[in-house]
Length: 141
Ligand code: ATP
Ligand code: MG
Image (cartoon, rainbow, N blue to C red):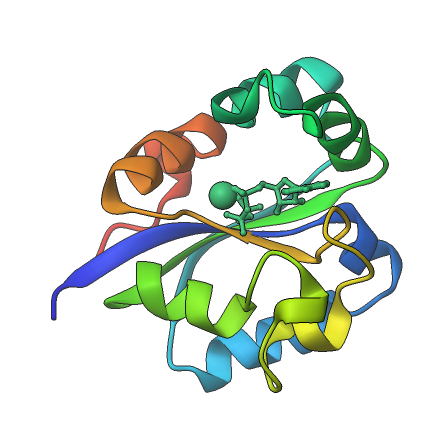
């Protein structure tokens, strides 16, 4: 195991449902450290850039519109093996397939409005964290 950082997003559906606090509690109970956090209401250009890997997929336009519906809570989490462990806690992309006890099973509304995001690899985290956070915003440790 190694200490990693990952980008976590509480998506606009979950912020609007006022469950961001419950999701933060799950994060803290899992033992992850929040090293940076902020609210951001993304522009369409920012959402399109973030989800550029999905450009061309049938859900891309709708996904980008959804991500701009309201503010997201962006966080950088740190911990041992946090990239895989945060995705395990999130659950499957489709909440209907997400395991009991996962965040998406409990809080997601649909495969699109699925409450949370997590970087899927160290390579993704290395791109996604600086997409939203400057080095000044990341607590030195
Ligand atoms: P995320 O990248 O947000 O952490 P993920 O890695 O579980 O989620 P991806 O395959 O990367 O899933 O899809 C990115 C996002 O696009 C999903 O979280 C969801 O919001 C949306 N999405 C994925 N598949 C579909 C689909 N079939 N229909 C509608 N939206 C979808
Ligand atoms: Mg993904």
